Amino acid sequence: MSNQNQQLTIGFIGAGNMASAIARGLVKKGHNPEKVIMSNRSAGKLEQLADELSVQTTQNNQEVCDKADVILLSVKPQMMADAISELDFSTVQVAVSVAAGLTTDNLKQMTQNKVAMVRSMPNTPSIELCGATGLYADDAVKKQHAESVNYVFGAIGEFEWVPDENLMDTVTALAGSSPAYFFRFMETLIEAGTKQGMDEQTARNLVVQSALGAATLIKNHPDIAISERRTQVTSPNGTTAAALDSLEQSGIADMADKAVKAAVNRGKELSEGK
Ligand SMILES: NC(=O)c1ccc[n+]([C@@H]2O[C@H](COP(=O)([O-])OP(=O)(O)OC[C@H]3O[C@@H](n4cnc5c(N)ncnc54)[C@H](OP(=O)(O)O)[C@@H]3O)[C@@H](O)[C@H]2O)c1
Image 1: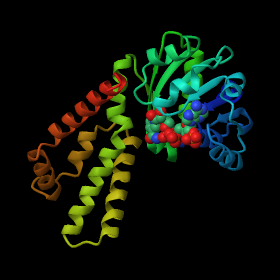
Image 2: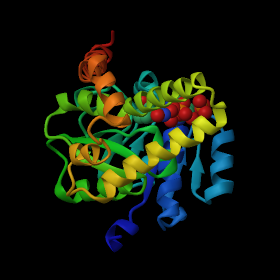
Image 3: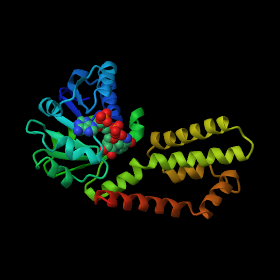
Image 4: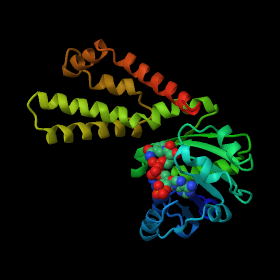
């Protein structure tokens, strides 16, 4: 952890699910809670966060702007304009929006183009500090700003920068939304297991641990291709081969391709206000 980043004051406007996940991650990774300041519309969440994390809290969004070096704009997209349009960001180094669908142009308009802006798309596993976040920087974002942003998102998992804002819709499809695809696949496997006579809890335990194990194997050995791992467990004419043949015949590749396209298209529609 760089010392310079440890000195940053990190602010949050909106202290809901995503903001509290990021703040928890930062504090857990050793960031001084006195250097975290969070504002929220209602008081209850702030009291809870102050108790739990000992972070600074306020119901005054401007106070966050005045104290923070890096600001996470973490309200719902439809509430963003209300929350930030009147604020003075002149002492803030970089603002990071976590709002789905709002483009950097939208955000720069709301802030009268007065702050370097990063757009982020974290996902819900960030709550367990194993999130996947996509990031995009506007032209005003300097290397030092990007490093501060890396520090923040590194506290809740892994991150990738994309060079083109259009790719944020693909980030949404591959990371923001994808935990739900894996959840759905797990649900279907558990259900299929119960149809074979297994009780639901046993099926759940086996499926969840296998999903975790498969992801861990891939992640811990990036030099080994995913297809090689698959081939390793697929004996010719064996049980895995039978199941994979069935998945291919049911069109698994086409299903994934269509699902990703559907999410990308819906992301574009949402950013156009549809
Ligand atoms: N949750 C996810 O999985 C996820 C993933 C990626 C991105 N995001 C994005 O993260 C953002 C926040 O989502 P969330 O799930 O964390 O929502 P959330 O739990 O509803 O949090 C939003 C918070 O913003 C507060 N707020 C609203 N208007 C405000 C204002 N004017 N000033 C200060 N605070 C204000 C709300 O306060 P109250 O307590 O008064 O309601 C609420 O606590 C969204 O833009 C979403 O697109 C979420």
